[in-house]
Amino acid sequence: SDMSVTLHNVTDTLTPDHEQYDDALNAAAAAFLEAEALFDDGSFTAKEGWKKKGDDASIAIYVKSTPQGKLVAVSAILECPVDDVMHETWTGLDSLPTWNTSINFAETVAVLSDNADIVRYGNNDVLIVTGREFLTARIYRKTVEGYIMASRSVDLPEKPENKNKVRAFMHLGASRFRADPSNARRTLCDVVMLGDLRGSLPKTLVDSVMPTIMSMATEQNVKHFKELGQST
Image 1 (cartoon, rainbow, N blue to C red):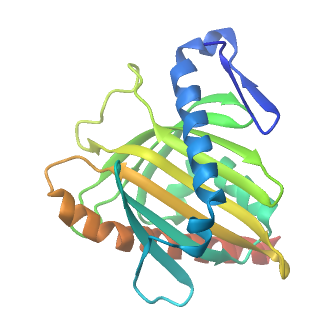
Image 2 (image 1 turned 30 degrees about the vertical axis):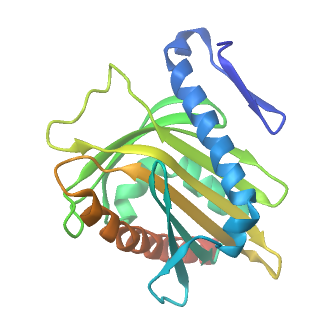
Image 3 (image 1 turned 180 degrees about the horizontal axis):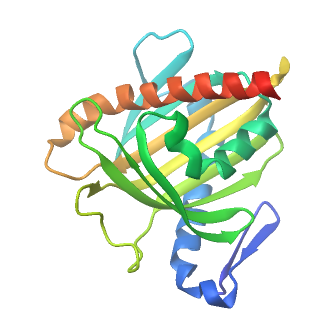
């Protein structure tokens, strides 16, 4: 590998002291391409082949079975301009536990470039699922309509599993933020997630609660970005 990835005509290049993160950067780039293909697919927009969960008016949740597992998609409107949403999502990771009650720690492990990093975070017990931790590489790009951010789990020898938490595997975690064409102070947000929470719970049980867990997380986001939008 040449220690760099190029997406949307922007190249992220690792510095020599970061070459151990080459696999992580490539994992993030692969996740980005997968996310973008999914978001751009007409069947995603129309939600063909997806099953709607719940009937919350402001948050739409859909699930779809794939060969890799159950894919969950959540759509919501954030009352905050798209650039501010992206900036906060990208730079605000370490402060997540201060406002997001489902997150009990979050840290940036390595900054790979202006558009790519490696982060570690853990969530509190929620419903039947005990706290999990995630170690993921993230990458984002500006697009014509807004932004796409994607992440995928990575392994790093210097960040072994936390003994008190099961480390989940995130095959794909991605967000698309688009400026609302009817209101520039609003952002259309789509989040997709496909992962394996691991641990001892039966998969069917985990699959049944994932939409609820993502819905709870989205509600917190909606509230947070509304407050942020009012302050900018």
